[in-house]
Image (cartoon, rainbow, N blue to C red; front, side, top):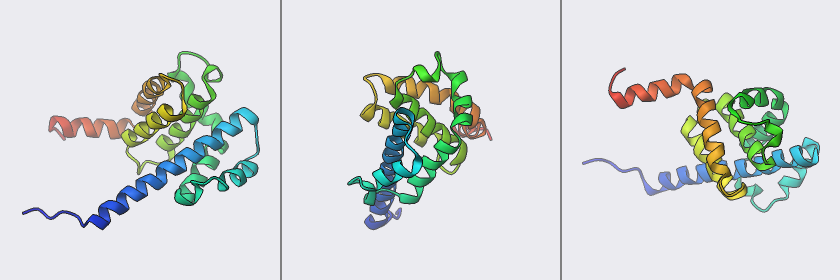
Length: 164
């Protein structure tokens, strides 16, 4: 007989994921504002704190994502650009913002599996991006993950083949 986790722990895990997803949504909105309107981070944070979903989001994760992307945008862009078929500035502001956000997570949140980061990016692109923008985001992030998370990808490949 296998023990199943109590329903409360399953619900808590779901709630945790939901809080992180909301934090990503808010961070995406802030990055978008920063790219399009060039608003200052303090102004963006103040505005987003007033959003109805803010109390439900993982606040510390939100701040880390937003501030981390804005602080490291040049480095993030340098990693993204070789994976693109056109200049980053030619992408829609939504897709560019999603790529910045996800690249930051791939580089600075090694505790989050790369597939989870890519799946979250795809969901954000489906919700906020153009019709097929999620396909482009997926392709770019697959290339980036191969570079930034090569060890993690190799380890998973070994587990699948049974070697390792």
